[in-house]
Image (tube, rainbow, N blue to C red):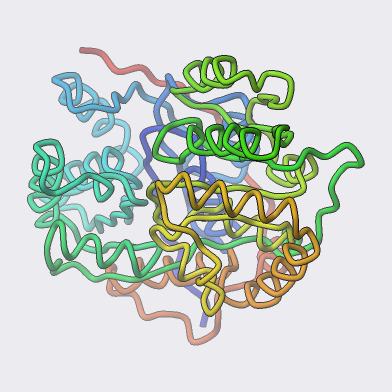
Length: 410
């Protein structure tokens, strides 16, 4: 028995970072398995690197790619955007509306609910990817977003959590959900489990990620400065990524006199960025299930990371190696020790990499999400596992789709 094809639409506000990689990987694998898939995202954000990723996956998507203006914060423009999205999605005749992140999740659940009132059999699926769950429930902004999540929870058929931590955070901040839920880890492709060797002129450290305080680049820069105060010379470092706080971090580097040892790059392919530094540092203050941790471990690169979100779930029995988030002193010590003990860092990197492949695979990720869709649609799951990517590629040829750019009118 083969899996019944579904018409699936993924929606996310901003096409950047790990959340967007998750969507592109999921959409491509579902398409290769024979489903009709589309992606909707914001038209005003996304680096050249992220847009290249979107354009690469677009030819595989029979429901196409559409870009609409979407604001990050709650605004009156959301009403006009929702209506424009509704008209576009209505004509796609979807079976599954899968919203990613707070804004994408809100759009898909509201539009799916309206389609259901009009007699469509649409399943509304939500994946927080951290999002509103990062807000403090005791602060005003957190109370607002968590109240909205509780209201939208009544319009939700299925929830995908990318880590046990995220599921627990949802339960404690939003409440128990009556929706069908799954915990589905992010996945990597088989080729990503190959060792990456560094360049001959590699720096001591490399930070790879979004340039915003949630990810901790400011802590990374301050730790470099602290090591200079202790040792008399600062380590060399690369900062790879883009984000809203980039100019502030550049000014911080300049103010601390680190211009000669810190080099900024835009977004780069992760495995190319690994070649730039002997040690990868992920000093996040909050996470859900970060791809950069998975990618670093799979590439067997030495890693310094914080104990936040789903990261301890990735490290498993090696979680004692993680450091306290937001603690600049402990981050400084960990980075200084990495300089002194490169052999230990290499041994730990190889030990971590040996236990990742079976749990964190794109194929397993797609299989678990798609079988959730089937259950919501009342379709009997396949009696055989989801097709592998290799066998799926043997199915009828890819359909070239238009790359739709649609604007919302107020």
